[in-house]
Length: 170
Image 1 (cartoon, one colour):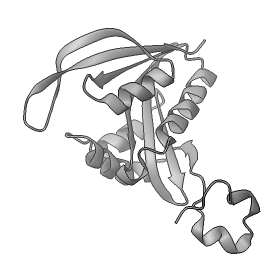
Image 2 (cartoon, one colour; image 1 turned 45 degrees about the vertical axis):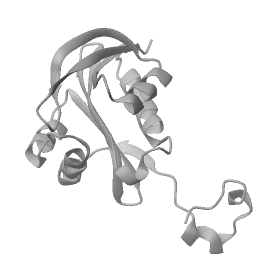
Image 3 (tube, rainbow, N blue to C red; image 1 turned 135 degrees about the horizontal axis):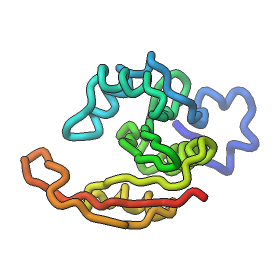
Image 4 (cartoon, rainbow, N blue to C red; image 1 turned 60 degrees about the vertical axis):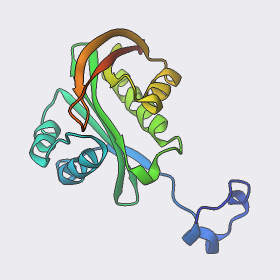
């Protein structure tokens, strides 16, 4: 049970068991590879496996952040960096955590870390029918700069277009 927001300031220590701690965004570690693979597999038609995440986490040109609630990973975002540009490779949130604004908080934090590494421009591809993702990216200042026909394949095998989005961080 989550406490109503108006009650939280008056909550005494006895309320803590019912109040969920806010999630924290932290860098992913190699120990997170299995959990990231499980979350990616639950979120996408073709999930990445543990070895792919382990490889990604060992690279210097890749930045991966996880959102933790306690010890549990509730979300992640991964980007590849080249010079002063970055491409968001994937972002996912546990289904039970969606619709609460957490993906926006996760992505804003990640973008801040990218800017801190000198990244000036961020790109990503998103399936054209993914309305929640498109709304999130629009709220965070991403704009469409291209389209890739037949980029994704849905679970039925049908091919769908990807929209290429861009955001300047400078």
